[in-house]
Image 1 (spheres, rainbow, N blue to C red):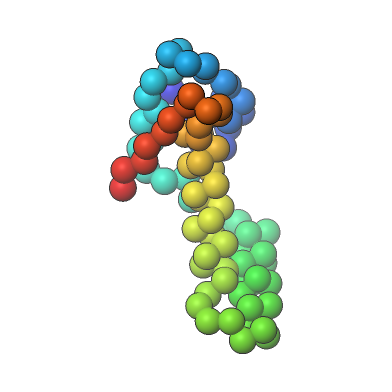
Image 2 (cartoon, rainbow, N blue to C red):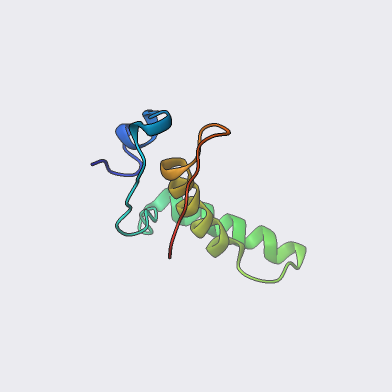
Length: 87
């Protein structure tokens, strides 16, 4: 067992048949109350509004941070690896 975002979850490489399953319980969203993250999201949103882009870039960044952590934790490492994710 490991916590996503901790050293153990991203630092190990199990090759071939050493690890055939990864089960994730919940999604590893970053702390929405972090002052640094709030400022980053606000900055990205303001840039996208200045450019006239549709949608909320801050919300997209927040979701992408989560999904990057998921991909890092379950990702395939070589051509014979495989991974599947179910919502």
